[in-house]
Amino acid sequence: MVTCLDFSGIREYEQIQIYNVTNGERFTTYAIRAEAGSKIISVNGAAAHKAAVGDRLIICAYCAYSEQELINYKPRLVYLDENNTITRSSNTIPVQAA
Image 1 (cartoon, rainbow, N blue to C red):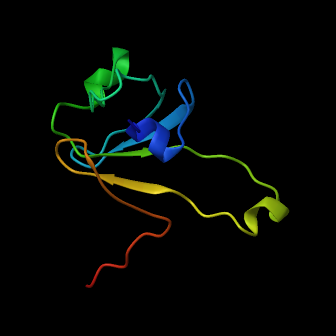
Image 2 (image 1 turned 135 degrees about the vertical axis):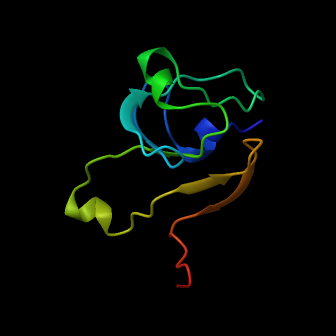
Image 3 (image 1 turned 90 degrees about the vertical axis):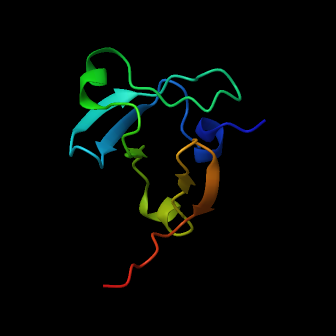
């Protein structure tokens, strides 16, 4: 069973940025692996004050690449539904009509 963490390429204990779309909070934390198949995405410790169950979150991991590495680099965007089930993956952000 592939987890969201594995599918996204985020490693356990890797530093991540969280952007809470629901309330505008932004904070830095690190990834902790939940039980496989649980579909749990939780915010723990002091950061738990910045998010609530049901909030829409953007979770980002960043890395520095050389110019040579960037030639063929494509980001991995993973989209989940309200049950934390992967609905699609892409390497570009879709353009939204105005």
